[in-house]
Length: 479
Image (cartoon, rainbow, N blue to C red):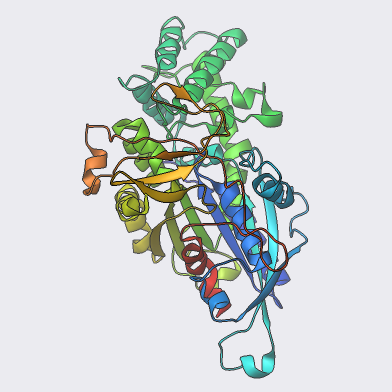
């Protein structure tokens, strides 16, 4: 039977956390936005663009409070949790808008930021009540950590069976065979040898890392913290690996029993606090999906990301946000699914990209709707890296590939602008889930090297449908 994702102690902690939020938000309501996505989906860029656009009144015609003239402004505020590092907004913005624009580094630890939004409400009392305010809390974290959430409902034997089955698939990288060959030389029923456990964990980590490469682009392989160990590196909590189920019960101190214990310790020390302190207290959620990267890697990667999203989203608390129950039990009442990097294909393919995204998240969206949450989908680029053109009857995108990017044998230097025909996405979404790979010219582009400035001198970040995403996520709270 699947295990419960939380304990009674966890539920008490979640309720107390929600009560504390409610107590501090008696005068100014707080909306907790979860920016969710697997590794390299663009979470850091999305958050940086969100903060910058709200602080500078960016060009967001689809964001109703701004378009209607009711959005007064925003300011950064002190983080509500002094134990969580502050999201490095200024450094990330400088990376995007400095003298040599480049993408900010991927998230390697959890961080948080609070924005205070001021607006003129449309409610009947707004005429005499004056401007309203809203605290918007945003949490950032490594995408790899998301992969661990489904572990809360799995035993060591269940996780091992799934992990070993995936390692044995024909599409698995060569490192999977290396791990399986090492596993075949060990007897899990014998007393544990720490060097053997360390070799197993190292070989399994190498397999996980190889699975993330662009040629495979697999997403469903936890534990995610193995790839970003931080201060847990070398600890027993990160020194385990999947093992075949024993034919009978094994004594304490055996390799199997010890790694099983460490697996449970990993959930208690790493995964459960992460879920309890952050994911169980969200109000809104955007799920960023690097759909194009999966399509470029092939059908196995597409199927894999579909499974990953379904399993991860099953862990979130979704449903209608009852204002009374919200005091002790928050629910995610709106979920936006976003296919990122829409600027890497021509706008003529955006509808198709969105259709493929809808097919990818169909199971997760259906479950969310059944729970009472409202869902929507969009193809977007939080910061647009390319512009469009037409050459010899071909719709192309124009931009500067990152240094080291390669196409047709040519390696780019990070300085040369090119016009690229990225290929056409299939008209029928199901074609993306078949056995035939989709022919795409997928490249990574640098952010725009020259940016417009507004009247106050602030950089204007070009985007695709970012305003539409923002309106769905927070627009109704600013009415």
